Length: 161
Image (cartoon, rainbow, N blue to C red):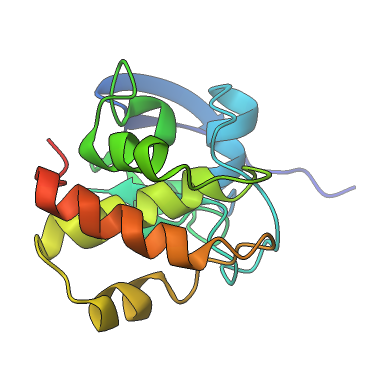
């Protein structure tokens, strides 16, 4: 019988310190969803291709479904729940103003990817937005509204605080 190795690690998620028991290869996504009960980060492809699981790692967008939790110790992880207390981050405000979501499933990942973009490029061009958001899939096809919302957020000062 094969025994799994379990280890305790410390993660900093949404400005809080968490002690969690994980297996060495456990993806960050499952730690967030199953252990910390932060279910805003979504599972879809499990291969880092669709963007539904996007979170910020030290302000940069990453795919949590392919990122081992062990590899992010000591770094600041931000999920959609930690982006702002009242949904008042400029990207969230722009999303509401433009009325981006249809079904809404991909929207946390879309928002977190957009924030990651604006953290490094405060006034992206349409081409830069398209390139940065390319890996985030929306089955409802709200891409034009997503692009509009990112432009609006950039004008509102969309940098993550």
